[in-house]
Image 1: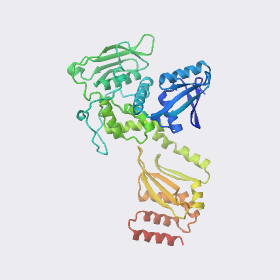
Image 2 (image 1 turned 135 degrees about the horizontal axis):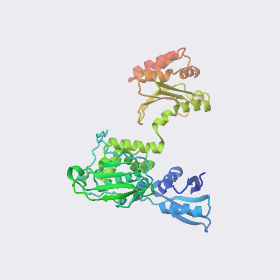
Image 3 (image 1 turned 45 degrees about the vertical axis):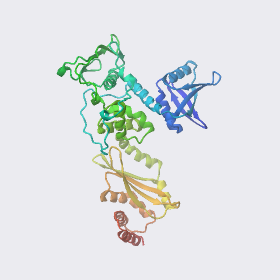
Image 4 (image 1 turned 90 degrees about the vertical axis):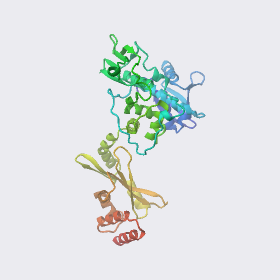
Length: 449
């Protein structure tokens, strides 16, 4: 355990979980983790700290100040373990929105990730549902819920930042709030000089220059002319800086409690809340980045398949797993666990049903499955396959992969040639009339005699 980590026991009713907290833990992350592990609704979750050294007093933990004060109090008293209580209060619809704002402030301070340093190219709208997003100019109420701190992300000369990344992030939020476009004249780790996009065309004076302070690594704003004369700020200006990383920052806290969040919902929320018209495709990729931060990188998952194959063979004797590659790239995956084989032999009817469904991740593909019918009239999984598309070649491969074909013979099928049986099963799957289906079922019955 790290030197400044504290073991925190969070209890709710008769359930409790162990967590580690320290000075870098945020109230937002803490509440999300507690909500997820104790299955409590985040919107109405409240936390309190029980100080058993002071007469069992309970202190509400409602914001960053409360949490940091509690951690400091524990360090001062030399406590290595603390107890907290989690309970459900009356839901407040504004709480989630305010937590999202606090998360954005936290991201600004921590400057996680990197932002593009040039004006990003516009991505054509590829909204697959063709759902019309209401235009901000057509709305009766023009109320925008842009956080106040966006307007004060840049305050003037003398303002200091820990790094160039932090300054760029502050500049991004500031331009979104004030609705103007900017360009970098110098964008270096030690010097940043920014002008209004219309400096040359319309001689707009807005500019910012920052460089390190004497004998320090932090950046300080040396010159800040916060005045526009170009007349091109306002309305939708500033939205081109809404990068994928910016979208991911906005989506991440909501995605934790709403995994089914759709890009079109994010598009509407950015428009109605912040007045930002952002292309659907950019929001889709931003949501992908947020999902990667939450659940891991899809590229890395595929890269770990080799390790997974070895682990299955090592820890699940009798299982069959096979990965097929094409010039070093993933092509197909077949998995049939030993427990599924034994379950089919001992508790299922001697019938196998085949089906497939689309995979909706970044790489698409098809999930093919072979299932059985158990004694409780339930679906029992036997094997599954991941491939690029559902066609005859892949289905035949699924049925005829060497180990699985051998096991078909061991499962009690009397057919001398399991390839014939596999072809009959594959053909029966694509029959749309009862008569054709009955013909193939009769052929399968005869093959089993």
